[in-house]
Image (cartoon, rainbow, N blue to C red; front, top):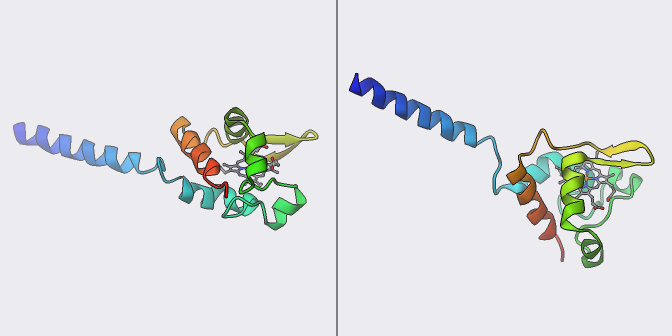
Length: 113
Ligand code: HEC
């Protein structure tokens, strides 16, 4: 019986670790590359075909960064962005946890050159 309990603990711990691996935690860079870069560009400059078409701001610019509040950035990521009644960026609230969004905010802030 004791051995079985131990085995169960080991299996549950391993499963827990595997599951926590799905949240990207500090690795906002990887998530940015997967979820955001196709529009916002890898460096956050917005220098992509979609970016130009949709007039995406250049997040490497100190001016642009100064005009965005943490709340605005967070809201855009969580709820998406609608311009003139059209959804330009989908909400990421289902894809990202609250911690992920925080890490993403910090990652965007660090794009400033
Ligand atoms: C389909 C293209 C697309 C994708 C994918 C996309 N965005 Fe956007 N995003 C936009 C557009 C268009 C805007 C509105 C223009 C702007 O504010 O630069 C925008 C705006 C934003 C803003 C608002 C900035 C402000 O003005 O306050 C943030 C922050 C942002 N995006 C972050 C992200 C993050 C983080 C991801 C990935 C999780 C992402 N975006 C994925 C198109 C996209």
